[in-house]
Length: 68
Image (cartoon, rainbow, N blue to C red):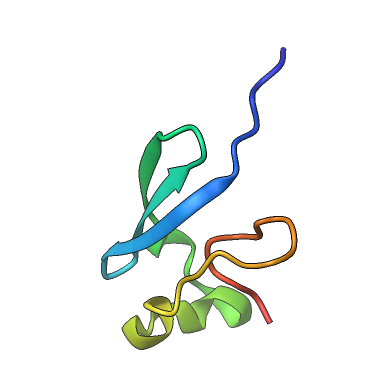
């Protein structure tokens, strides 16, 4: 089975731990990340000031939230 791959075009914070992620085909998803914000790597994103630093990064489009 083949699935199209779409790049993230835009990302916007729409809630305390939620993002509106828009893809290059014009579609978008609202994603609540709160359930996965735990542990050493993702736990700090529970801080609203840190979460609001969301960005698209990396040479290939990257993830919505840049990792160190």
